[in-house]
Amino acid sequence: MYDRFDRHINYLRISVTDRCNLRCQYCMPETGINLLHHNDILTFDEIADFTREAVRSGVTKVRITGGEPLVRKGIVTLVSMIAEIKGIEDLSMTTNGTMLGIYADDLREAGLHRVNISLDTTDPDKFAAITRTGAIKDVFNGIDAAKKAGLLPVKINCVIRESREENSASAVTRFCKENELEIRYIKQMDLVKGHFWKVDGGDGGDCSICNRLRLTADGRLKPCLFNNIEFNIRELGNKEAIRLAVGMKPECGSFNANGSFYNIGG
Image 1 (cartoon, rainbow, N blue to C red):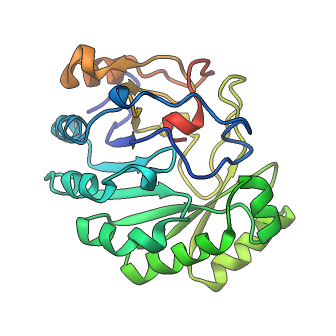
Image 2: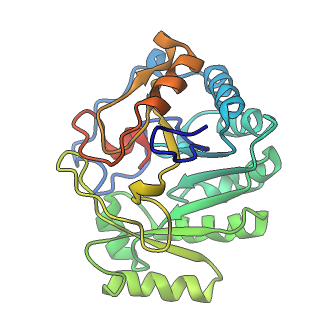
């Protein structure tokens, strides 16, 4: 499917939860968040049904996000349900990696192709400060588990302030080279202020080629991360929500005053 600016829309990002086991400074307030009510979160059947309709409409690439997707109870079952949908050529997940040591083998067996893992530093103390609650050894274990399970290529998402030459980013770069990991650098963004940049080493942030739709955990389909436009799939139905989202996808991002990274998926 194509939008009005002739961009080929074939990529669906699905946030399966607004919950996370970390409290990263650039993502969540220290006091936590007002979590969605259980009944507001899409069921596995609703997610799978929507994904089938999206694939019928032309989606070939699906990424599962959060929050932290691995805290969603039964996540391996959901991965299996999505993997069974014919027409998906690339099924991936973005995760903080802390629980991959537990789930990597099961995810691969369920049909997940690959993972992106967030890692902004290799220093345990800095990692604990950034995440407020995390232990970096869990991420390292998760990376090893993902490689052994065949969730390849393992890609690392490194958040930077200004440049990949920053000390922490440089250390992550060295770590990736030593461990045969791909890396991309994501400059800190601000939804409300509309501050966003092209991803260094990836396609994100380039509005001219944006091919994405985003489904939030509570069923709002967003054609753009940096825009307030959204369509409730429960109210409109899957097919109509997709039609409207593609038809109203903006030429360029602006700002988003009614969402956050933790509940849209970044």
